[in-house]
Image (cartoon, rainbow, N blue to C red):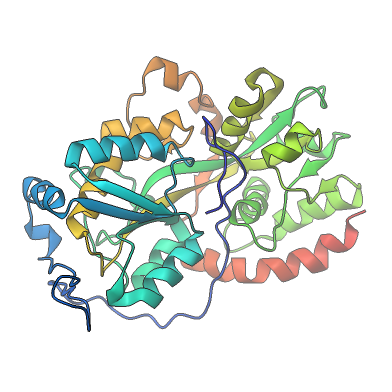
Length: 380
């Protein structure tokens, strides 16, 4: 995760890189996870965790306080209002906290390479990376007390990963440069401004923009062609910009309309000048995705990680995320001052979550080549 704005001082854009590779699927079968570090001294050994499903929340919280530390990856203070979340987690469980800011692929690579010598307890990854972490047997399953309130699409059946907050691809328009901010994909085709999509060959947000256009035009995660065709039209019109939609470029007037996560759009606007920008969910359709927590199988502070996931999905944790413009995954009543800063719920009626992430994983592998051959060749 590179830093990105989601409210407050959130600058630049966090890339969840598509570093998919062939994975041999291994079934998780152990009910007791032995987490003792191989070759480590007695003092360095990771604690042995009983099957989390046998632990009460009180037991988890007590053990979390005894562990006294929580080390995260990809959950920096400047992303999704994590700063406030970590302050409250630290106070509630008397924990010390450290974060290493990484992309989703980097988080998984770190957990895999360190193995039993883990330095990370919990990570925040794009939802499509949750199953990858599970397949690599890097996760400890834990279902929080709010489990039944999380939509089925946003959680693993065993609790190996669960979405904490969601995002939807939105139109971000600089009203000083565009007289009629688009509300639909059709509006964009009829416009005369440039549309910023960024690096579709590498960035998850950028690839999701293609999927959003596909969904709006009859496609889905198995069929991106309608989205490819849409952007090819823009490219042929000379209206497709490959510039990154980040604050520095926005402030320089290099971004007229950008396709970004709704929480990024609201964060950019809040950071620069809320009245200068309009944020809209395309009326014909868009894609909903999310970011999920994974608890490292070899965590040195596993109970602290479980307690952190519990807090993230609590009402307080969900509201904290919303303060950073990330839409809660649970149906939580937001304080009026927080709700008023979000995109109205009615705009999300045609936004759809990805239903088949294995299909999307395969489709995303082919997207860079399709983009090069059918879109970039027309960029003027």
